[in-house]
Amino acid sequence: MKVITVVGLGYVGLPLACLCAEKGKKVYGLEIDKRKVDLINSGTSPIEDEYLANKLRNLKGKINAASNPSDCIPNSDVLIVCVPTPVDKKNVPDLTALMESLSAISKFIKQGTLLVIESTIYPGTIEEVAVPMLKKQKFDAYKNDIFLAHCPERIDPGNKRWTIENLPRVVGGITKEATKKAAEFYRSIINADVIELSSVKAAEATKIMENTFRDVNIAFVNEMAQSFDKAGIDILEVIRGASTKPFAFMPHYPGAGVGGHCISVDPYYLIEKAKQLGFNHRFLILAREINNSMPHYTIELLENELKKIKKSVKGAKVGVLGLAYKANIDDIRESPSLEIINILKTKGGDVFVFDPHIKKGSNVKDIDELLNKSDYLILATDHAEFKNIDLNLLKKHKILAVIDGRNCLDKEKIKSMGILYHGIGRS
Ligand code: SAJ
Picture 1 (tube, rainbow, N blue to C red):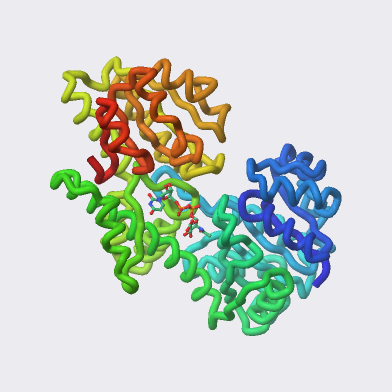
Picture 2: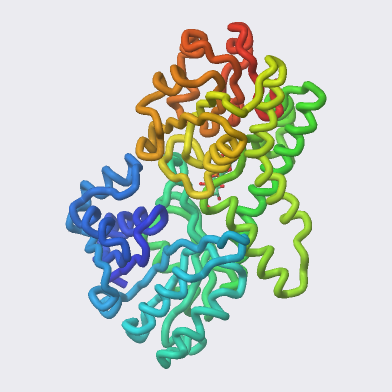
């Protein structure tokens, strides 16, 4: 299994392509975005990620990025599909990218290829979508014409502790041989356990369970935060307290919302599929509603503080710190910041935005300009630059109120300067 094509060179595919190249495989990358193809072929990362940028620089010429399937699919022994599987405006799974890539692949794939889908999909997708598409090209995955399997991606952007190389993986194939081949491939590139599951559905369900588990736990603390706000209890202290229990408690943290292309999306893949099968995931749906309400809740907290000084959001100069959906990365997909900004503008606020990782999306050049132009702040993303801000700057720029959407600032210090402060479950 020497020649690999990674289909989709984004947050998931690009690290995988780098890893395969580092392990001595001949690597192609199939990517529809020509700009990305050119950047990658020149040894430059299209994603702001130091780890990736260094790897790509050292691997220049070892990853052949292409945008035409006929240039890479026919010569490949292994194809790994890492394309986005988002939801549409109604939170219905959108498999367009997956279907388009499988359709292109199936026209050029050669007999005996190992085809692994890493994109997050609902249980049943491979049997209902990938198998028939291969069948159209006369390949029967149940007879191992193509070894077809699922190995859910487990990338945590920005995480230096758990990387693509040391994260355990699960695999499940349409046949036992496909499972074995997929496991053999992953064992040849990662230094971690590769668990073989009994079916492709079990592998598809594993990823959904992992991320839905996280979503409901975040919803749990988001609801607790709202309750503790009424009771004047600092939720961070209580989470610290509960975390002293050495078993059966796993801390999650309230915030201004849940973004990203995993946690805020994956539950809908199961909710939708289960609906088709006649099961209503009341709990998962409620958790999504709670998490989706957090941007509004954050604005409510600001309005409560403004009321104390007889002000309202209308005409208020509000600085929003952070656009990215989580700390120290440049990804804004499903970011709560975007909704916070929309709500502020709808309520007539004058909004200034700064994100050191997304300068293009910012409307001020730096944090000083934002502080200078704002009377109130909402911290939406806990980038290191914001967590370590010199809080005296808030006093210097006469900031009147701070809503700490990630509970990452020193509330006592801010309050001691006579500035109104409220976090999420933290007053
Ligand atoms: N968030 C909270 N409270 C928390 C944790 C996260 O509000 O306690 C928010 C974040 O601010 C962000 C969103 O949820 O807006 C998602 O955060 P995340 O840390 O889960 O980051 P992701 O979306 O990059 O999730 C990835 C996932 N990895 C994969 O899907 C392979 C997820 O499974 C991991 O659990 C997660 O990283 C992680 O643990 O960092």
